[in-house]
Image (cartoon, rainbow, N blue to C red):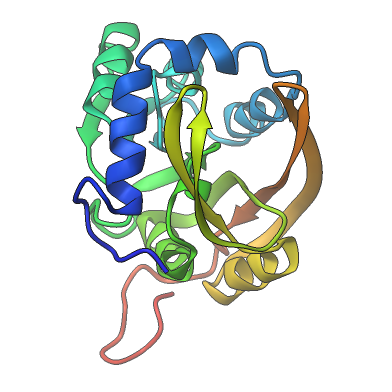
Length: 228
């Protein structure tokens, strides 16, 4: 298990340094991916939420998804890399952009109508995933949507030494565990599809999920109780 710290040798530190070093090269590479799932799940938010809705992009990178969402919504982006946030700011000047590790980002309860997390949670130590899903649930208003790509196989945590030319940290649960954790956080799981994306000639499998905070749930957390 990688400790929850942001020093240069931690999982978070490796991710930060990697994306800072990659800069615009990450977007250039991501544009070569053949999967259309990111666009499809962005469309789910665009079609499922009202104009002017508040939407959060966790791990926003250089702002490809933010740019599309900002055409209809008020958007906030969080990314661990200051370099990627700078690129996103140039691309989407209307967005609220925050440099932060997503498990330590703080927002009021019920402040978002939608949350997206594409190719980002798999960089977070999986020991943090259940807690992160509960936090996302709390940030959403009742009826709010959570769309994300998650891992589909068991990966306790490892460093790929040459990912696009930089070391990069990955960690995730298998698909069935992810389904259980999302449901356990209180979400209604609307859709989950496993799909392999070809990355540099190699298939990499993701679990794409659409989940909703039930419309009848309350925004407050009772003392000692579970977030609803």
